[in-house]
Length: 479
Image (cartoon, rainbow, N blue to C red; front, side):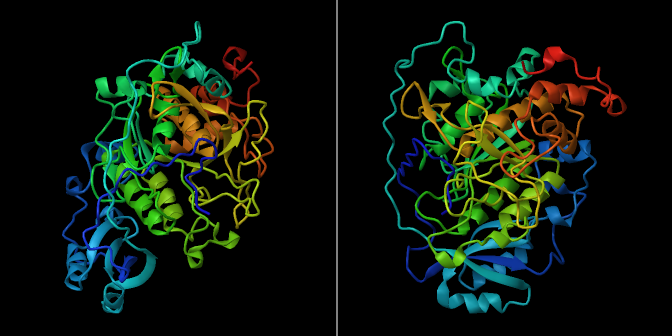
């Protein structure tokens, strides 16, 4: 099954979701429509401000990444033609030149026959309207005892295991880094004291919901809230995340009401939105293997980094200058065992989970990919880690690679803040080479457990000096 990659305390509270444009009729279905080209596009490479933000353009300029036709939205004439056939365009993909549409089943043959349509794939159906309800969140008083003398509070171990406190002591907390979180919902983020500093500093950007097509992402699920807390929480003595100084964008791409491939389409749209905002790092604690419609299920052979639109988009995101951190999956104890999608993407930084003894958590999914590549890439604490309770002002406990990924993603942000002139490729390579199994990676933990103090030194030392025994002073190594 496809998971929000969360094993414990997985309470997905649907609070009433917006009705799609059409009536929820059984004949209406969602389709992913791929186009043949972008011929006669009204968009121009020398006028990218029409589809990319100033921050996104600055990132491309910084890394000498040209704006190309791949960045153009699909041709509006093609989208208009789909509408003329009775379709509603739910969202679109610039990079994959496609659109997700809702249309009566009997109308899809006409769509497939359009001269500019390359491929049509059924991806799901609309759900009926649900009443929106505001959850009861108790934020009047702190319910967790503060830990005297422990700045990170109950999150201390999960940060120290990765030597992330070294980066913080050096003054790097993710400041200036935009970190996008793709998830299933963020109940309570707009009210919880754990995120007060994000609100006060204007570091919690306008949320976006690609499931329902609106800006109401603080709903539907608490999963994204807990994920975000491992990075952005900032209550000293109770819980401080791995990147308390970063800026965050909450992007809802997961539909908690069912398991269909349309969620991969949402994911692609959300990732491209993160790119358009100028995000530097993306965390995705989501994975896709099996679905409510079994005909959509993936086989192991599909874990090639190319079979899924999500995996293909993850690699494109890297080529645009971003780092995509993806949960490996929680199938280690199941008959499937393998990582999920998009963790199979070649350029995604896929993260498995360890417990606090340093061993692989039994649920953490295994590699390799279908084409024999090492996955996961690295591992981080993910068993019985500290997260924020979405419904009350207290720390809580959860397990899953859903949390090992963001714990690591926050430190990726801190490391990149420290070395803003290092490319995403250099940052990822330093993280891998700092890890406990760098010399002998395997299919359980990949390159192993990163040491961000060592990664800092690897990026600090000139390339020609890295082989020197004196290149990595011991004071920054994890004791």
